[in-house]
Amino acid sequence: MDARGSDRATADGAPADAVTAEGTPADGATAEAAVTDTAITDGPTPDAETRAGGASRKRTWARAVRRAALALVLLLLLPTVAAETALRLNYSGTPERGTHTRDRDAIWLGHAWIDGRKTDADVTALVRRLRDTGIRDLYVHAGPLEHDGTLPASAYPKAGWLISTLHSRAPHIRIQAWLGDEVAPEKPYAMHLERAATRSAVVVSTRRILDAGFQGAHFDLEPLHSGDRNYLALLDALRSVTRARHAVLSVAAHQIDPLPALHSFWGTVTGHPKWWSQAYFGQVARRVDQIAVMSYDTMQPLQSLYGGYVAQQTSLALEVTPESTDLLMGLPFYHENRFGHWARAETVPAAVRGVRLGLSRTARDRARFGVALYVDFAATEADWTAYREDWVR
Image 1 (tube, one colour):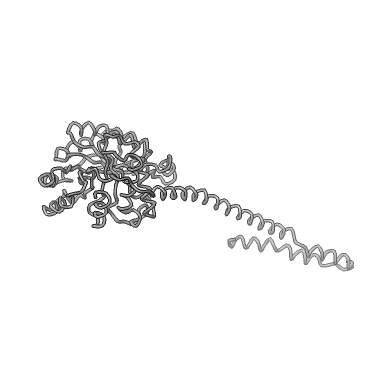
Image 2: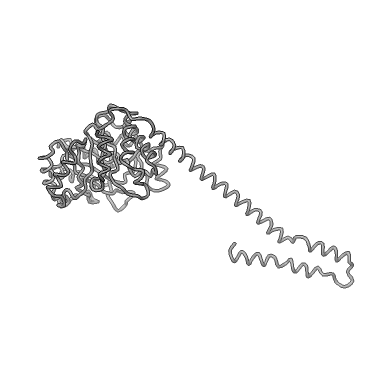
């Protein structure tokens, strides 16, 4: 109770003393009357009864609040525990034989490869690193796009050098321009895909990046909300350009709802939907040549839970990705500890095992399938070793 409440309690108690004083027998009053008055004044006063009743009601209210809080915790906790248990079970079992690289893997490369920081020696080392792996595509960061969809040529000054040097030493490798930006409505200051002029500018930027020698355009626009029709319209326009140039159109995709309509619930609670519905993922996959799931930053605290999550994501994506589209599952080649990502849990071995389990259960013999490594500049030797030993073999 606060100070003002204490003052009120003291004032409420004052009449008890007044009654006692006023209850002193007057001259000539009988002893019986005095006894009677004393008996009356010795009992609880009306104010005391009010305070006792109030305290009882407060205790009852406190118990009700505690019970409601406990019920709410259980309501939230039990489904979470059930979901995590399901993920752990999803990580059990043995992957089928043959669930290894199909030589359609990819890796994201940082901007240093085309802004002048890398040298001929670096390209030689990269070619040596990629030899005897399943990596076919390089997503070389050539952006970011401006918020209006434009891309100045100054963003990729050494692209021609990288492309020609790599092709002379590893002709089987495809080099795609990795283009990205933040998008509205979640980032209102960023790219507005609902504006036709912005989408048109992205298309023009793609034509120019292909003119520079890239064999494909890889888009990473975030955060994209599930059901965004403007994004689908952009992909339709881009597909016309890439097909005419015999180039690849690929995208980095959000994860799929691990529970039905979770993106809607999560978006309402946090303002960031995070996941796509499985149906929307399929709509995107049907519009591109290659789709790479960003299957990291999952909020899972243990390797077994993360691996089970990746197994589930792999199955969900396989179910709706057409056979004509390359499906790639992302591997975490980086080590951070922050909300949503625990380096001790999101490891390459756990991810690869999850990928193989999901592939085994859903489409073991699928040819157009691979993994995508994120990202070159944060990778360790342990990451590369795990990729080679667990996936390439």
